[in-house]
Image (cartoon, rainbow, N blue to C red; front, side, top):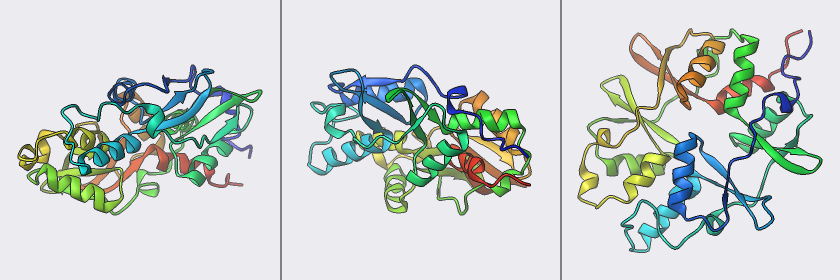
Length: 268
């Protein structure tokens, strides 16, 4: 059987490349990420070529550093710092003729959600886990959601305080928490919510995490075929799919988990 993930990256990559200037203030970088519905953006150098990347993880680290220094920000992110100050300069890239499988393998190997795409040595686009979802949808990959979900899920109760959610997010070394009402998921608390929470006065952080959580999630039964999972995630522009069974949370799936499908051996 031909490799279903042998299609060249150029067929699914996203262009043009979304980027911010190296001197862009951090609140502007956050605005771009939220407006575009992405978690990472390229930072353009003086020549216009990507010089680095900034993700929500980098922005959260900047907010935490500012707070630790005794300068609780009046704005969401500290002023006076730019994208160039916090960007990471390692850029993982593939050629536009490389396969979706090769690009997905690079994502898994480097624990990232996107790779940049080169054409004749120049970065011209990006292939993200969301783009890989489009391949999964078109190929109608039928394996159940339960086969790719991650367990256990790090959770927080809707009545827990924002400070408790921040502590659990920091201590769990995870990208987000699922907020539960009893046993049923009602929202998520991710790095984006944590960035905004860091700017709140300390007394305000005693409020319920439900007041600041995001509703950006999708709950699907563990038996749902993966191609339907991908299709709904694309249509609803969500990054997290919660796997449930009989109103109980069983696991969580991100675009990163779906990208793993493209790295599996092709059945003979």
